[in-house]
Length: 281
Length: 297
Image (cartoon, rainbow over all chains, first blue to last red; front, top):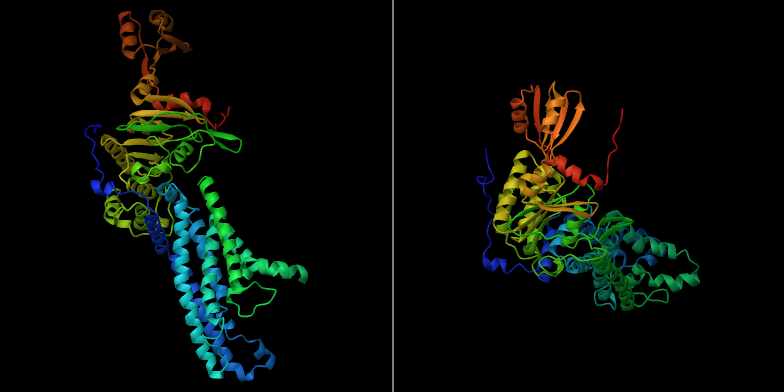
């Protein structure tokens, strides 16, 4: 028979006094933790790969097929071709992939209860939200600006065979190309905010797609007098002004539009921060 | 105080948990154990009142994982991440080394599955991973919610030894269970709650002494005569049927000797010690949240 006195003693691995004195939660450590979280999930790599591949993939396909068929195209079709915007239209798919990933980064912690382990480790809570935001927007910016520039140059090279290309030094083109990366970065921030507000992956992805894709469609059904006043303020319409070289009274000016889009994302993040502080986890 | 909708989960609950011993936290399902534990580490906020850990709210400690290590539910882990990566993610928040993560995986016996995705883990493996996570920061206080759930007998024994060892190192160990028998073996002190209120705050020794009111079952053809001999101010006798008595307040030895001295034949003399589980049930009976009604035939 074993009695409690002869029971084996299990010893916890020891930590040095220096290590023990150095167990504070700091912003940079929370960032490191969130970066590690993202890296260690397969879904991050798959979704980010889709976002990155979709822009040049779709862009090159459009540029190549247009250059190929240019001589067979009708004059009206030729007139509608936009050598800057059309090869960059892959951003539409990229923004969905980034929206899904941004939602997963936050709301993906809820179903299994990982969020409780996270918030027990970082009980002040808000550093977790800011770290997720910082890491994901940085990844998006660093990945998508070069991807957009790369897509621009490759597609213009393909179009140059028919002399229908535009150039980097043409007014507004550089802003527009880099704008694709900036737009996607703000979309990433919006997705983080919606994920934190809704805390349910399917619901938050639905909300993201609804705001970005569905709202403009619904608003376009409004009578023109209303539509012209409302449409340009909607998040995605406002943000996409940054990628446009044509500006009229139905769109905001590029940087103003971008500021409005950023304002929407900021609003979502402020609501998310307030709720994260106040709700039970 | 914590309220969910119109249900009061935890109400005016005040107790201290001391270092150096294992404190068991007992109560029937729905008594408010998990809610109380979540409030301690700030996951749930009380509607009224406050919870402090070593004098201040958990969130205000600079090194929270060194203050309190908590296992609140098995597998509070992203299913797509490996066991080792899960611990590395938590360790990173306060600069704990990779080496310590590996040492803890070794301690809880998960080294061989460290790189496997947690989604495929059994409940018992999830508990072990949760315990490793709770121990990461070398915490002064350990809070474990039903840690033996899903563990095999060997695992249950291991937890028991681990908790006692950690308490001996001077740590504060607060562990919940709905099994009195398990707590009697692991804990030194008990906090018993029911319907969110404190029912008992006693040492295990006192609880056991109090619980074991001995009952002795006697069968004899001379029940009447024996009864007259046994009767006394601290003795309670029930005649359950002709020739059968239940005696509370005397040991079986005393009854047997008395019967022999008076030449009363005994056909049965059976001591029956009320189990801890019985004592726990009678203590919490009135506060059980989800009571099954007896089906009478």
